[in-house]
Image 1 (cartoon, rainbow, N blue to C red):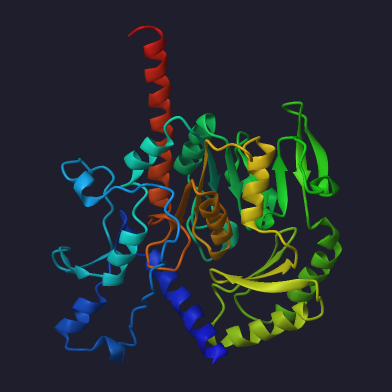
Image 2 (cartoon, rainbow, N blue to C red):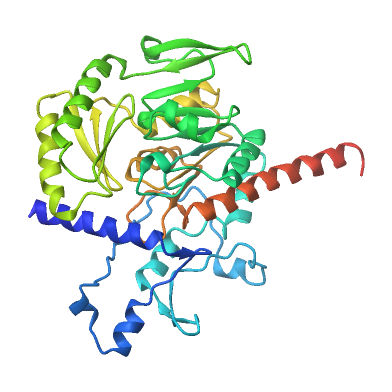
Length: 403
């Protein structure tokens, strides 16, 4: 039974990956239903059943949301989300909604673009700290993980946001690799799902000093703290990486990635019939290392040390080192698309204030309060956030000079 569930989950991931390659201006174009109807072919006979997931029931509502009444009369032409539609292939006119559960899901997790004005009204007088995932958030999901490059426009947007807000990238990639991808010096980086953090030097409680070293940046002549709670596992991680390369070398399409404090096994290009063999080989390696465990993300298996540390802990650590841990006027804003980002969403919800935002064009269970469809909407949101802060600075300056 568990194998069937895992198989269904992997098949769904593959379908979602294919859908992401057919996005145009935020609209997901799918003609399957229309073609099937015109040719009198049932979707069931085509094996095109659609996944529906129950909406996450919100237990905490720290952020006020815009109601329909409040939206009435507002100009949302620049930020209103277009849900996925089925279009007529001849006229491109919308025919029916791609999935009715999507609309219900968006009602529970409204667009951060549509809700932007309301969110910033709540944030007035408070300090926003920005946290961003990388893959699927700042860059598209691609077949070759080495080619997951962010656009120049996205890089410029993140740079602009970091001018006004403390900004950190928290990725499952190695810190060195995500730094190489992003190429910005005014943001903080946390790699390996937060197990490798470069942050400002500040005293940290709870014995964190055992995992800290100080790094000197020659260009700026400034010191930053390197925090690595899983440092003792590095030798074993290198052994696991080597063993996985050897055991999977005959499986076509597999890519083994060394992410410093975890090892990623990418199977986006592995044939479906080979996945079972791959999974067995990966598990056979992990079983030899009882201090490690196996997790699954978007078309990737990850081997991680079994320590109490994840992206949520990384968010808390960065807030602490930035001097915001005990501040009641701080609003952490986290944008991410993967299962590992849920730990950060949970931390924000437990704080009772902040903006957890998931990137997804399909319904899924999540602890996020808001949503964005894809990296293009992330770009729009970040640009708008920077403009909002810049405008508030300008109006404050004019007020100080009596204008």
